Length: 408
Image 1 (tube, rainbow, N blue to C red):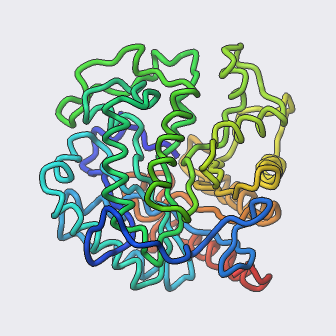
Image 2: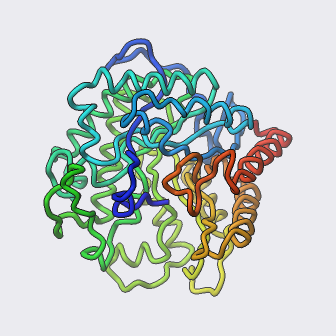
């Protein structure tokens, strides 16, 4: 789910950063890493201890980022305790600042920055909670930090890519040997911002007091080729340090017209084959874990049919996984329950359908959106005390079913 930059403005929530697993000392050139907790086997099968593995985790987006604004806020400890108690094996989270201004701590006092990271990752290690860190969540943040337009992601010689490489060196080099590091992710849903015919109306907001550039223009519009360059540069930089952990993009499910838009055709619905083609081509080597985000389709039609099931779409993505030998990660799924989206009863129905389809399709890794994010309390946040707490129980039961089937 996109964290909408404009809607964040009125909320006193600092969305920021954290990186992975605890290490006693920073090392830019670490020793050879231990075998990763998960790996990708033949035909895209996710393995753990050499055996096929499947699990349902949760997004804990701000688990670490809250400490950027308030270093003494270690509320993630209670949250991780709850997830461990319920047998939820891993989290996906933002491992970087959200707004450009929030990078100041990393730039000006990296020792303090990494002390906060170390404490968070150590907490995850103590509870044996797996981590899938998203290293560059908001696609506009790093270009703003270095005063470049968003299109700089498409230039290997840009300051944006140079900053990315430096941050990867610091973070990946520091946490590569953590026993709870599962995979590395580029960022959140870069794929949804590409090739849009109405891109001029959807440019990033101008928020100078949060560190954004003073104006936006056509150079802030993204294309598939730009994001592909970012993906390749990201994964190549990681592989220089970490040869073993899976890498994923953080992309959402391709839009229903993704291939047509890429060809600059009209907004025409893609075929099933074109969905698979887009998913594969937007996940370049050495990235070896597909990422999709699946939410209720609502009025969005696919494949020129009136209704498309979650199962059909997930089976197509699993087909791509088997075909390429890359794993599949449903990095977000869930259903908003505000009145605009049909209310709690409708959300419950869609949640049940989504989780059932994930299990039936054989998706190896998936993560519910979202745990302990007060900013989204009105429509989707799941906590231990609110009306959506039942979803935690559903995840617990799903993992128990997978365990009984021999996948955990």
